[in-house]
Image 1 (tube, each protein chain N blue to C red):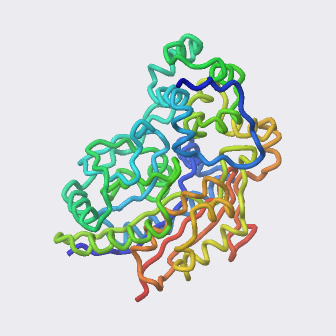
Image 2: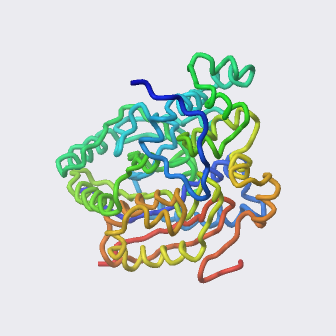
Image 3: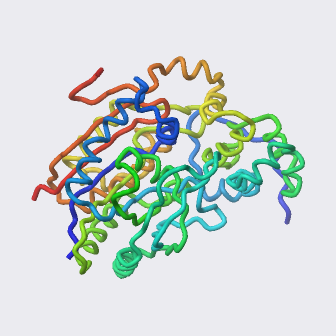
Length: 277
Length: 128
């Protein structure tokens, strides 16, 4: 049976692309960000993670508003890199696990999550922003990319994403192959990119959120998405995706790693949790 | 009954929530920006954007927003900032410059106010 090993949450701000593509690891401003992912890198290797079930959002790189899916899962054997203005990025090929992806699809749809099923998907910085920081290349893991609409409102609620996490966990543990799976939730934390408040960051709220998310996530399940937007800026609506990761875990968790940086446009966090029950 | 074309819109202070209604209203502008994810389209747009947008049959108001780089007005109208990012790139502007303009600032003013660009606020190791 497949083994759920733990969960990772990370921001996926676009500047992570810049930092990686310009190889800023020795730049004094950027070096701490590269370093902040080292515990995640080590964990992925030590725990022999085979597959990352990767919950993120596309930034109108793959999907357009002619047909914008609320939940979409990739079932391909191989994915492409999106062209976000400078051509597809020079990163290792992300391989998929079609059999596991299809199993997850069947199981989640049976659990009333009506997914759009994608045989092709170009991965943008929603996934490939943080990924090069999380692991050396070629990637030691396979990917199940899972897109959530957090751009075109209305978007799924916190509770919906939390329940999605529960179903993801159930499905992983029902998979008959002996593989190690981690769930990744991306996005956030505070940022606002549309309107006169461009660049808004809420450092105190982000840190409060990280505490609540770790110790008492259930206190936020009934919050309207608007509540997160009011506290952390319009684009912090993305935080709902973190709840899909957290919903997959036990109530009590063990923190392996956490950090938080204020970036130019985004509150940037990395969080690595394991079950503690 | 055909609606009167929009001639101008307000840009009140505060955030814009991009909704399906926005997305429909500004569909063509979003579509132009989205088309710029392809290198061959970027080349044509960079060479002569006025010609590039001709085939989209935009209103005068929509064309003006592009010509005048009115990014704040665009997000209020209904263009997603993520796709505007693809267009500003073709005008050799950065995403940060686009945002600073929404604030009514220059890129330099915005960046200078936020130095250092990355700062540790871990509760346990603040200031490191």
